[in-house]
Image 1 (cartoon, rainbow, N blue to C red):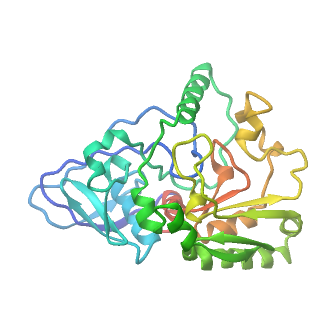
Image 2: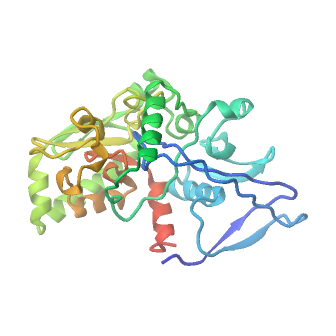
Image 3: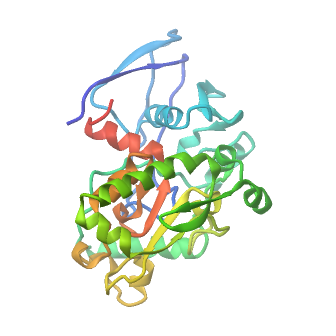
Length: 327
């Protein structure tokens, strides 16, 4: 159950903040595309410079909550939340990034805000979404959304991720990543996630000693993929693999199970209707080991990717806030 939480917000007079959260940040999207939500206006009392606000319950779609989660999730990287030029903004490794209605833009890009799609900061859910039976209208909406992606019309600004990870171009990325062994495979990753990933591995090995499901899964790992310079399949956006913060753990055999929505879509039209029992599953203890260190599992997306993990500590934190398990 959600609990109350107090946060100190620096609120400046006479502003109105509009926010919406839609399209995805990671290598796919976490839910069936929905209609744009109504804008919500947040207005403080004029003349107040600082106000302690009681959030009951925590509104994890509120931009201030999202930005607070980012600051807490990337200490030393993101700070200085403030209202600048009529918009909330933060410094990301010293670079000014504006909220810009969820688009996370630099100052120059704000002049063409409508040219960019929004990031998704949807909180990590406690479990994978239930399999849905789509109406004809929902099917048409989904088809339109995927078609738009295929036509490269989903471009999001890279300013935020470039500032956060310092990997703006190919050669920057190649010179930044390091080689480490993970689950028996040598992979390339961003150095800033090395410690978290090593803790994940240690937790999995420890769990395998007492959990037969984890032991079986661990022994079945065939390959692990990390950094690779590429876009998300069927998208105009760079994959988080190209920032060295996404991991694919692939078994030697899927044993006939479905692992990735695109692969399933090549075989059947109703790929979204595949039961969870027919999807490749990763033990809960393994997922928990990843999530405890800030990695989100792609099996919780509507556009499922069962072998994919990406470093998104802010949405793990938002998920904890949403269900009240961590305040």
